Image (tube, rainbow, N blue to C red; front, side, top):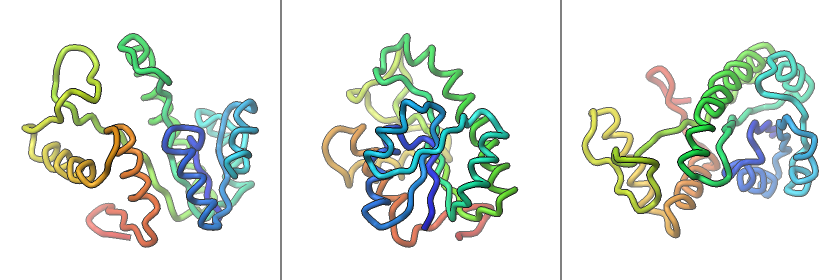
Length: 190
């Protein structure tokens, strides 16, 4: 299968590329920086230089590659999670997630790509002062929807090991790489 990953150089993207390559998939990695190309090639992806915020560039890239599936792992988070860096990154991260997603969806529609996975974000730590770290407890009472999502997340966490951050990465990869995963959309699975 030909798979395009937007955000392949991130914390989830890199192991995802390796795993997909190990399963004999042809992997393309959307990156805005030519400087990222050697690292992406090293892990087995074919770099595709295009800024996710440039709709025309994304459309051209998707049209040229004609992937069978696209996985959106776009984020713009700092490597170090200090409160100041996270606060500064929040607007940039929101922009890349929202606008990048819009650009990818438009390109997929125009190119006839039928498979799309989107990394979502959720904040499951209990409210408090400043940024949460891995010692802060998870939220336990919230709206029914948030509580149900948090319960599912906690169940995934309980099945994994090592640090919570690595457990989340591994759980996400397990979900993404199930041979026959189900995606729920508008009341049906496909």
